[in-house]
Image 1: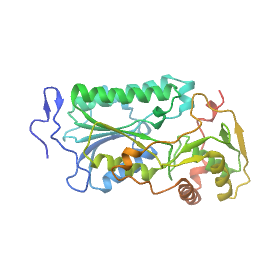
Image 2 (image 1 turned 180 degrees about the vertical axis):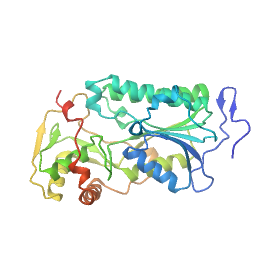
Image 3 (image 1 turned 135 degrees about the vertical axis):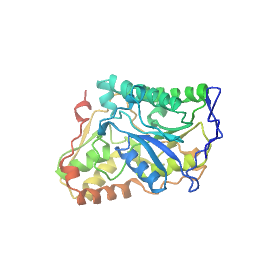
Image 4 (image 1 turned 90 degrees about the vertical axis):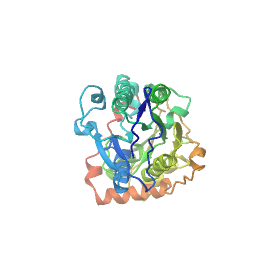
Length: 318
């Protein structure tokens, strides 16, 4: 599987392939495996028989920036690095811009240096579909940096990449990262207000988590590296309608409260996924089906919503 000459003239040898198509299995490192996306991605990789060599997540006491300063046991050659940890609360990033810089900007540098040090030839990096919108905030700026630094390491050191840009990913899990669907479902179950920041015309393009993982795996299987892929459910949805759907489906007495729009965030989101569709991507779960799946999950796991707190709420109207 491994070429004798993995690293040549300071650059990764592109002849070392990464196969995730059911053939030869790969050895991988992953960050963010305790988050929503990372959990589902790691489950898929492990189910397909790939071997996890190292996993890094702050929720287990490991900071991604430690990759720069601590020694980790990487005794086996690693084929690919999946980088899926990040600071992702946009309003929190506006209140405390040091957070996306430390977690996202410093984080990607630590990851890429780790790849260079350990001669890991390929990396899959999670950016954000927010980089496609004209609005700029500290979170978006950090993700643009993530993309550009990843490309710099490809040009300078030959570390091949796939950049994926998720669009409002959601799915059933005990998740405390203040995602909109979790916020609204929790509020509905508790009989509290569902808050919509913006007008009744505000839209988002949602992505069910298994569809997102499908998109990642499909992109990797193509073996066409140094590319960026937007991943979404491919349907712009009006939040006003979705909020009322959630209230109806949960049989809640909650009301929808309209609030002022958030700072430096888009009010209409529709993501172009045409390059991913060109290689066969077709999202399977629309937002209304996905919400029903989450309602079912919450009913089976009431602790998931009873113990839930929107940790980003205090930043919304500042």
